[in-house]
Image (cartoon, rainbow, N blue to C red; front, side, top):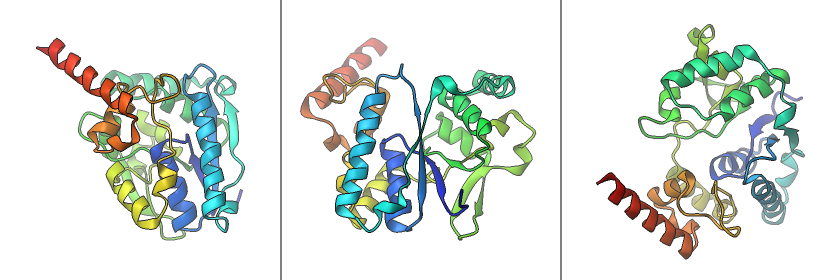
Length: 245
């Protein structure tokens, strides 16, 4: 593959879609999207449908840029080979810091296919989050085209954190609100509004109480949730407050 093609894990969510559009629309860079199909994941079909809709919107609104998005590489999670070394590293890290299970199988996937620069849309987040903890293990550099990269520090290559050596994290210093402002300024906010974020959809709509829904509300982006979803969010928050008391 051409080294000037960016390999991107694209779920159809806000963060990875922003990166896709940032690369294609603002930087005119070719992108090879990857998507791991998990039949047991409740939102898989929503994400696949969303990705198709976003590609269609890019073709309609920015036809001269659409060809920069290569056909996605789709892979079934069940076909990712076991790797005891990566699994043990993940287990030891997770004993100290709670990480999403997806990083374990994504590392196995990247290693299996010799992908050493897969971009992941992990964004800036507050203390206590995986993003906050991971930031201290990353270093900033520039690629051959002068673009800033955040990847694992060289002195971490012999530690358990080396399971992250396959990835780069271009959005690790960027917030969702930063992305929203850029999208509005550059004219692709409408496409961003089509992204998917809910983990527990109800009747095809965001639930309002899963973690991504709560984050969306707390980030001041409540316009992305239907009225019923926002109602559920406030009820959920009120009930949680009563339980804590």
